[in-house]
Image (cartoon, rainbow, N blue to C red; front, side, top):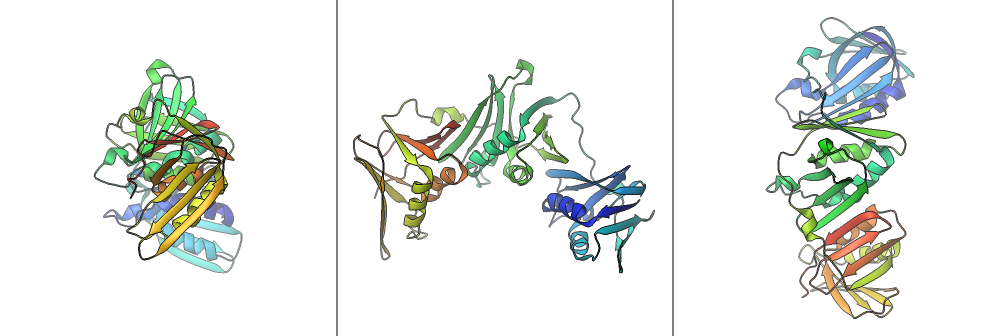
Amino acid sequence: MKLIVNKDAILDGLQKVQSIVSTRSTLPVLYNVYLKAEQETLWLTATDLEVTVRTSVGARVSRTGGTTLPARRVFSIFRELPENEIEIDVDDKDTASIRSGASYFKILGISEDEFPPLPKFQGTRAYSIEQKLFKMMLQSVHYAASADDTRPMLNGVLLSFKGGKFSAVATDGRRMAMWEQEQEIARDQEGEWIVPTKTVHELLQSLKDDGTVKIQVSESQIAFEFDSMLVISKLVDHTYPNFRQVIPSGTEQRIALERELVLTAIRRVALLLTDRTTSITLTFGKNHLEISAIVNDVGEAKEKVAIKYSGKDITVAFNPEFLMDPLKNLSTDEVTFELNNEMSPCMIKADKPFVYVLMPMRLK
């Protein structure tokens, strides 16, 4: 394999894949990035056996071939090379000679034959969705996924293609975020799959605002293809709980709030909290919302926000982080709080097909 590649291009490509490179593995090849030169393209692939990421960059290829090289080491070397063009020449023993200006490095690689092959997705379920919309859906729900390994079915985002709707859902048992988008889906293409949180984070880092995402699903894996990126992931092999049963069928009070204003007020009040005190109190009164916290041996914090509200007084306590998550990840100017009383679930909605259900904490 022999080629010349632009320094910025290969650094950008390595940046997209190296977060997947294993840091603890018994297989030495998993510490490496797989470089494959074909015609005018250099493919870069990394995997930890759970998630695989592949991207491509343009290159002047004079001899096709492939090898694997230590991902983080070559990234560090390429970043410091003096010229914009880098020549990479790999011999039949997987030794790479790297030249740029007056700099020269020789790096020992591992044969491409030892790198795990990409899975095939022929004859599987396939969907297409706009990148911008898919990114918005994941951004709006991912934070609600559980980090508790004892409930693996909640360690990811559910993608549901059913009943003419494409839904993205995440829950940890105390709150749930859902984005449900109208989409035509053939009956034989219906299904639900849990995508691991790690994969969702990789997608959020790579998805753009233009173009489409092609999604393919096999029995145990899912693939996302967009631009020059391919992200393949194992699925969480569990049944997702019935998330729809936690959505209240009706609420008595519906209160419109300025998202950024309320978020800032909650953030300030939460500065008072300690590890032992994890709740703040929201009191909805006539044309005002009071956000407060009282912490023993520390003090008290209050913020009052003007709102349009004429219903009954309601005082309810929430985990402030859970309350701020949807407010931080939505982009709308206004959100709506819907609730009945201090013990009922609170729904947060926006001018999008989004709903967030949050269980209150016990008032002290």
